[in-house]
Image (cartoon, rainbow, N blue to C red; front, side, top):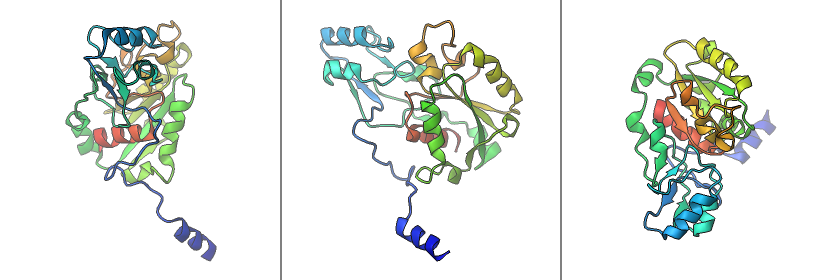
Length: 247
């Protein structure tokens, strides 16, 4: 007992202070992109051509964060003169078209589920479904249970049964083999319920976009309430979306 208390004292308080304070992310992290619309047309064309996801529109000069995998190719080609990725991890949106941007994003709090806050108060139970993902998005959701993030302190938990949940969190491109299982899980959740799409694969098909084996966007088969972009989204991006939208 004394050894345990001694170790606890020596380790100190490990949980981050977010959302009271925004913790610093590592320097190589690519978050919200900023697009310089007055960049050299040749540079813009080179970025559009090189983008593996066709996430940049050459006419509007906007980047689609739902398709983007944040590989940084456009930033490297333009040397930051056309696209520059910031360290801002607060990039979740309530509408898919909000992800198509020059870098400005509407306040997620203004689109939050106020009726959910009234119904469920400080408790939100979620069922996670990996619909053919590579496990990167799933891993960064799992770490929300660690002491640093401590998702449970906000009353948000992942549960084993959809019948015990208030909503579903989907990762992966929704392969044909997972479509039926996903829809059955959704049906098993009692009303009212929410749907959260996490990661580029779930939002648009990700690297698999165009393949007949996947669904090009969860919103084509289910009513999505919250879109969290990234490949994978940073754990703080997931935390920001959940706290701002539902709490």
